[in-house]
Amino acid sequence: MVFTIVVEVAISFCLITNAFGLFISKVGPMYLPEGTATSASLYSVKMQSVFMPHEMSPKRSNPTLDIATLREQSGNENVSEINSLPLGQEMSTVNVSSELGTKRLQRTEVAVYAGTDGYLTSLGVRLIEGRGLTKDDMADYDLQKDGLLASSVVITKSLAISIFGTSSALGKELFYGSKKDHSVRIVGVVDNVLKPIIGDVRGSQDALFETVRPFVGGIYLFRNSLPNNRDRPREAAKALAALEAGRVTVMATSLDRIRRKYFEEDRALSGLLLALVTVILAVCWFGVAGITNYWIRQRYRSIGIRRALGAAKSDIALQFVTENLLVVAGGLVIGAPVAILVNRYMQATYGIPGVAVPFLAAAAIGFLATCLGSVTFILIAALRVSPMGAVRST
Image (spheres, rainbow, N blue to C red):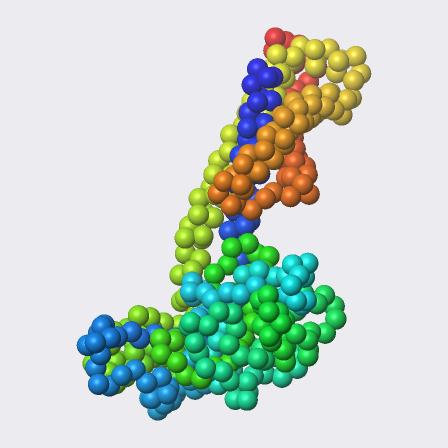
């Protein structure tokens, strides 16, 4: 029976640590600040033509006209265009380094936000150091060009710390290719903004911003703080559709809804993982409590004799706690290496985040305390029985 409980504790610890580690990796990004001010009043609209190039309407897409049309709508402010949105699931990335031709100080998969004049104001990004982007920093938006488009960029605080540490990033160069002319100069640092696609929490806010001229196929941003503004995105899409025949709405929503949709599956998975951890912990809890109850029932007579001979309640309680401690500790000694091996396998096969040793140690202490807590009420009930009552009960 003792061996069964040891195996149960080992398996439970292995499952709980990996499930809870995955739970934390899913829940953690949900509480990261998005980096945009009042995303509930920030709206986005994206349009697309259903015509083939040879069938294109004479009223071809004109992003400058689109922006002007949105500015004319009641309550719309800070209208601009951008290539992708925080948590928008469409991302352009680049690898950057502070030194040419080195990977020592390189950051990979840095999100590239490219937008028209004023798009940082539309997003509500807070400037920490330096200046924002101006019309003088503008470049043409070219999908065929690799790397960055402009010569001046603004980067997030997270990216600045990752590359330059505690020193200022202003005026320094970032290299993004093997050639010397593939570089940009940092003119400002802004508060952290989430990438369009985030995996692990680390690096989820590594992003840079450049400004471009209006381009076809972008996402239009605008703010509207008027009351009852829930239908503003659809009204904006309707106005844009009227400018060109055969135009359909790809997206018309607020950034707040985009965030909720992005974490929808993770939120459901987190709930299932939490329920799984609770069930496994309850099974282990009752298993340890059950074997403790069995041991006490089998040794009622010896407990009564020891009490009659003057043994203190604390001595008897210490005996059973020590026995349970050895059983649970034995399960943890077996379960911890297995948990690490399972985690390494899942990490290599499915890309699940690794479980750190400090987390395992904290989980082991918490698991041990929980299992030992399961015997508390049984011990209290057993120690309330008088010595004679314990002897007679057998």
